[in-house]
Amino acid sequence: MVTQDSAETAASRQATVWNFPDSAICTAAFALADDVSPEFLHNHCVRGYLFGRELAAAQGLRGGVDYDEETVFLATILHDLGVTAYGRGDQRFEVDGADAAAHFLRERGFDEDRTAVVWQSIALHTSVGLGHRFGTEQAVCHGGIDMDVLGAQRELLPAGFADRVHAAWPRHNLGFAIAEAIGRDTQANPGKAPPFSFPAHVHEVVNKAASVGFAELVAGSGWGDSYSIESTA
Image 1 (cartoon, rainbow, N blue to C red):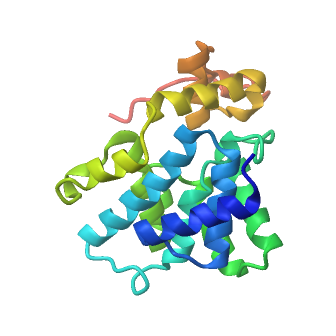
Image 2 (spheres, one colour):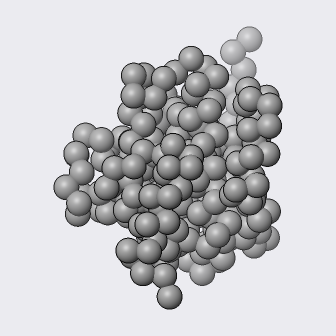
């Protein structure tokens, strides 16, 4: 059985090897994510941080100068708590995870403004074209997670870096494994897949669930709107 002390000792060792922020709150967050997540999910969160940090460096951003390294670490390490029993609720997994991370940080007296940045980074991490506009920390977090799932901007990584990261933190077919995990949750509770959201798309693909279209929602509004196109010519 892995105790909290042994988990935090392991986290401290990893902090040394990979130059993670080694504050008490970061060590505790790493230990929590490791404890409550399956390996494929925890490894994804770690890779998300490492890829995000390296991508930021390639774009000329310096940790501790241009962005808060500790806040980015916390956001990426905790960003998928909503896919675990620890953070799972009745909302879409991104929001469940953001709420769980914020609760974890507040219990430990973490700064409220930085907690808000962590919440935003997690809640918006699947929102392409939106999350990164909230601030530099949110952008670094989004970039690393996006790269790990979809390979976005991987060409900016130094030669051999991704191989070293994958050797230490194996993928375990992350892209499909996480889709299956999200799909299991949305199948059990379709309310976790609101229309037009990323979880709704996963629900449709994994569970072969019928998607709800915009026209259907409008037709069911009760306002009697009808579809028509008026020519402006």
